[in-house]
Image (cartoon, rainbow, N blue to C red; front, side, top):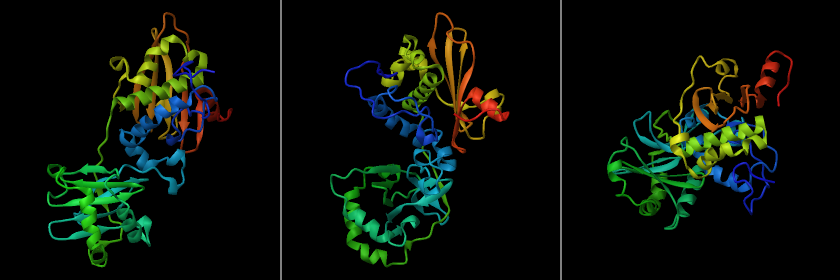
Length: 350
């Protein structure tokens, strides 16, 4: 048994299976057990989070889905990272987006003269109790996320809690001026009076949100990993393990050879043949030879595209173009020929 990434290294285990595309993007098809090690899976997990939550495609995922582990259920909808937004009253709030809708998290804002409280609608009716309890659990060893926004007044600081994480947000010029533990302690000392005051909001308002998207080498490494997974699925494990793929393997695992493989996403060409026939918003990748180079093209949400040369061969090992299509909205995956046959009423999904 060997891993298509780590080869025959000692100590590898194979308790889990790997999806061709990440399950968080809606892929249902998995590689056979024993093709990708648990150790490779562990390495890929944080890179997958960067791709799906912080890269260019994160907005599409928060707008359209799918949610956790590819679920289409609204209660499992994908959520963007928490960020600073501005509500319809012009006040700064801590919010996230799910299925195209903004949601405020429970937080307080300390201004120059008063506190302003915003409670998460989804935590009602006992959002206040949950928020106070979470703040009481904060101590000097608790980790937190720091956010900055020029929309926040230099005299204001926001502190919030959502899904096990604490947040503090301020104007960039005041980033190191506020201490979250101190802010929480002072707020808690006034909490009874503040929560009974009229400056507590429970309604959900319209929010203008500003996302900070990141395109890092880890995003490109994850895209190359998806392409090598699909290569193994379409052409076989032995083909993906050939030494010609060693450099792209080193790029995926260690970030080596960035000059060859690191790519920024681009908008898919409207003239792209596969783009014209696949389901709307679907994910797909296709492969072919350009002279002696084996090239993979990955497209996510039918818009963002990465073209990566995966290997160079002395003699072209394949002569036909092949593709993998993830129709996540209908929870179906296809090889190219199977998809064409189904469109003609002659085939079935994978």
